[in-house]
Image (cartoon, rainbow, N blue to C red; front, side, top):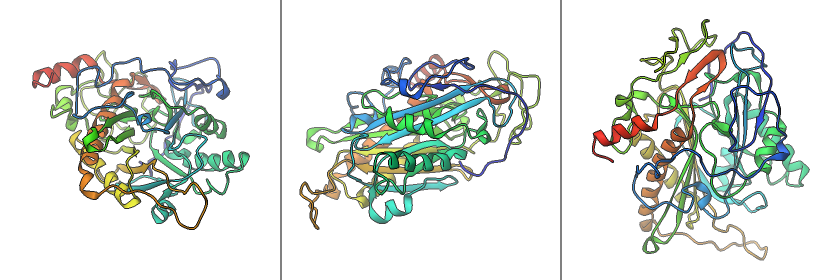
Length: 426
């Protein structure tokens, strides 16, 4: 989501840089250094598979985008302050997520393509990506107001490493976290981008309120980063599809999980305010006070958020075929209740990690391509993994209280499972 009404008002907060995958307090007295990052631990909260919720297909080892060999993910999470909003000081609930198709050390481009369901959002660098069919270097996800900072920081990172030509047109995408975060305070800095880039790793991926997804809201619940994967059978080629989402879209009443109308079954736990003052955000005109169960009705315009989806595969696909994969992502979003609404930026990128350059430099490169008639299993895997990644983003996120004391509730696992059982899906 890009163009948004601006907020203004009062309160101060200090800034904390939280390490990827770490637990973070709502306010913190100290600042961790970017260089102290460690590989993210396995998710602490139950994911969809662990709850017995299946969207079909067989996941990879980590059920994550990192099941595609070479892919690395890094996060920088910024959480600090509480209470009333003071632009430039906080409260802060935001961050950056880096997706490396060939890892930090990889320098060869990957074949890639993009697709837009609804264009109320930004993804830089896509003109050349779609013209050349190639993605050079990482893709980064952040908040709307930080796109410029992140874009500049990638170039600065590349200059320090002699890779400025390769990364001169970086790909940066955004969703809007202005309900929970001091988005106009520009809290994402160059060092935070460097940290996300340098700390990226393979293995399990931290999900929920981390990285670029820290302040995001998904289907009326706390959202953020989610991921999932699918491994095709040997008869289907044995390829892997991995999906990563930054989930900040959707109407609660439309949320559907494996055919179950979860949004209708959990209509309460809507966003509310913990303060005794009116929120400063012009989008919110009648924010109810919090009770134990939160508000009983939506308290800001539904369907104004956005979703970013990255699809990775090791299948030998050319750019036009990757475009076909990206165009299947909305089918997964639609199954979860998404509509691609007017205020939503629904932007997708798909890439293949197959080799694009010859071992010996020369004017001609020979690459492989999968027969189009063998792509149906990849389409199905993309739709399955997109749904699961969206649900994982909500399952991993905790209830968060942010700017102006606004509280957004986590999807309750117990009530989700009650709904699944009610409709015979568990």
